[in-house]
Image 1 (cartoon, helix red, strand yellow):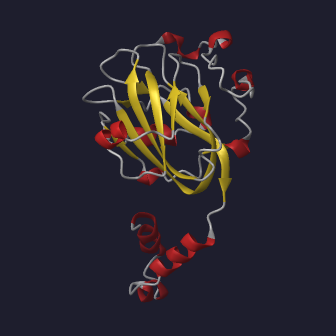
Image 2 (cartoon, helix red, strand yellow; image 1 turned 45 degrees about the horizontal axis):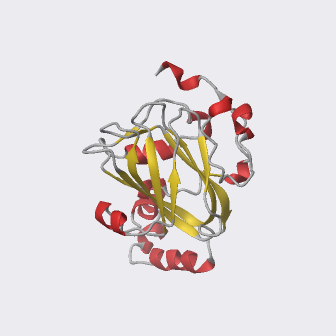
Length: 226
């Protein structure tokens, strides 16, 4: 595990030929966040992330919650449980034009290999994911470098949730992933969902808020009562 922080830029596994010429110069400016407007983090609905076949609850959400400066931290880590497959559902708080998936695994056989992406599907399990044609299939490298894997932008121009299906790895019984991130352009939430939220808030409990029974209760209700 000692080689996680070595930077072998020359073979960072980016020889996919499908990275549409955008280069991967990010290796040399590691501690400067990638153009901040392209890193999607605040707009992830962390509380609603679900991961199937994770060995510990909420591991999937925790590796997505890591910030850019934490992306090389060994913990928390997502590890699969019964076999090497993982299925993660990541919703966003609005509409996203997705440009690429960022992922960090390792040089070991536990590194994920085939990653299938499904757009705007919140109902997948392993059997439906196996039967359904993915929006796109990505081949991941066996590397401890940050992989910045471009997606077909035309397919992901209207992304409000993403399901990530790790179909296999490089031979280990379990898959381990240390960080997942997203690059793209966040579009403001359209007016309709905001109005729906306001209607939801107009319920019989409102008079308790007016009497000032406590903003904590109100905040809790809006955060967790969705």
